[in-house]
Every structure is written in C-alpha cells, then in structure tokens.
Image (cartoon, rainbow, N blue to C red; front, side, top):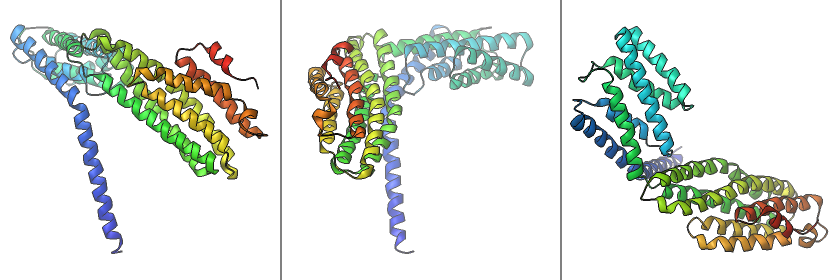
Length: 368
C-alpha cells in the first residue's frame, strides 16, 4: 500500500500539470477573441451612451458579447445572423411588454415567443438561449429612458459594432486554420508510420493502433473546415487579410484532399489490420505505404509552403504508375492485392486535388 502512495502523488502532480498547461494554452489561444470582444463591447457602449444618449446601454454591451462569442466560428454571416436574431427577439419582447405589461406570466410569454422565434431563425440551440436571456432583461429591468424600442436600437448598435470589429480587428483565423491542418497531418503521419511498421514486421497490434488513430480524424477534419470557413469569410470583408485569399483557397484544396485521404486511409488500414493478423511481414507493401506517407507529408507542408505543390504531385504520379499488385509483389494473395487496389482511388483523388483532371490521373494507373 505504501509503495503505491508515491505513484498516486506522482499521478496527481502529472494530472495537475497537464490541467494547468491546458488552461494556459486555452488562455493564450483565447486572447485575440477576448481583445476583439472588449473593443467591440466598449465601442458599442460608447456609441449608445455618448452618441445616442442612452444612460445605461446594457443591451448594447451584452448583445455585442453574445454576438461575437469566443468559439472558433466567428464568420461574419454567423455574427450577422446572431445580432439580427437577438435584436428581433428584443423587439418582440418590447412589443409584448407594451401590450401586456410586466410580470411573471408576461415573462413566460416573452420567453416562449423569443425561444420559438429564435429557433425559427437559427438551428443553433445556444443561439435561442442567448436570445431568451436578452429578452428576459427587457421584462425584468425598468423601462429605459428614451422610450419604446430603446433597447432594440442598442441591439442594432451592438450588431453593427460586432460586424465592424470582425472586419477591422479580425482574430487572424488563418493561424487557427493552419494549426488545425498541422494536427490533422500529424495524425496522418503517426498512423501511416504505424501502418508501415505493421506491414514490415507483421505486427497486427500496430495496425490496430494506426486504425484507431485514423478513426479520430473526422473531428480534426471538421475543426479545420470550421476554422478555414471562418478565415475565408473574414478575408472577404477584412481589408487587412483580404490579400490572403489565394493562400486560403490553396488550403481549401488541401483540406479537400485531406478529407478524402482520411476516408480512404481508414479503409486501407482496416484491410491492413486484417492482413497482418497472420503475423507475416510484407515489406513490399510497407515500402509502398511509406512512399504514400511521404507524399501526404509533402501535401500537408503545402499549408506553409505553396512551392511544395509540385513535389507532392510528383510523388503521387510515381505511385500511380506503380499500383499494379503483380509488379509490386511476387504471386500476391487476394487480400494483399486488395490493399493495392484500394490505394488506386486514393491516389487519383490526391492527384485531382493537386489540379490534375480525374481522367488524366486515372490514365497513369496501370491496367489490372
């Protein structure tokens, strides 16, 4: 019992260190979004208070914060939809308050109407809750100076400020998109290395581990898709990062290839796991997968260096010309042949993503 106590203390220290490291990373990664929200909230308050004359523009501040949020989806369209939806909810609440006054049952009516309207506007459940919170303030707080629809005006100010700050003080989502790309291709590299080891040494467990890694790639693809969509949307309206659109379009092509790669590799690695169950080494297939891994690595490096586009294509072209089971292995078994056959559509998709037509890519494949 006493021997396990130091191990438990060590495990607690490691867990605490990991928790602190993760918290620090979240704080650093959230700094651009936090600064953007502060600028927008103070700007909305200043316009509503000093320019329009609202003594306490609470709605202007809270709607700005809610509209921008701190998550990865900061697309201008999402910001616009959120600000419009919340402002509509506030206007509906003010109409109800004008008609029936304030009170408990009036609050229930306002919340019900706001939740239903919000769900009609957006499929995001969090949006409906945010709109309901803002609408409840209309019922619970005293009527502001300035008369009817003062809070609706504050909501419009908040939405306009959120959009302006999104364009003029963007969070530089290109960095987040590039980081998501690096994480995805790092998983590809680890999984393919495991697949090569499995084939070279007949290691079934290595193949299973590689397959398990690849099964987690869909979340990574989705993360990259969200951050890249955000970056592209902001680049269309921001004068500071508009010139980066060609780079983002290149990333979009690589993302498409990576998505197809993830799907194909799961199928190929599942077949490798089946083949390696007999413990027999297959060095020829291992060399083939190793070459594929090199091409996919070069594809991932294009996110940082566009000059590598030609390098990855040349690797895939060379692979395409060699994807004949009889040329790779002497008297291959059917299950070994299937692995080579499964690689053929993957290579065609990768070549197509590099700019080659599908017909030209298929023409490189040897007949089987």
